[in-house]
Length: 89
Image (tube, rainbow, N blue to C red; front, side, top):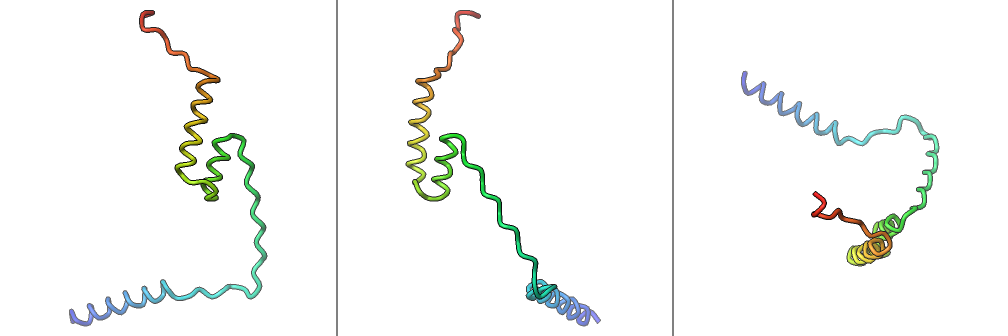
């Protein structure tokens, strides 16, 4: 009796596996045409432009890092961050 249960469980597992990988038939012969994807908005910052170039593989990761480093240096020169004085406390 135990052997029959094991065989039935094995057959159920095989049937489930076959059902899971069986190709799905199309429900209708002429599917509705898909709407074209909306274009992505253009980046509004230099960081966005650089990230897009890395994603499109126009520049390497090293070039991206160096460009961001130069951008940070330029930003620091244009807008330096003021640090409070320790003696004010």
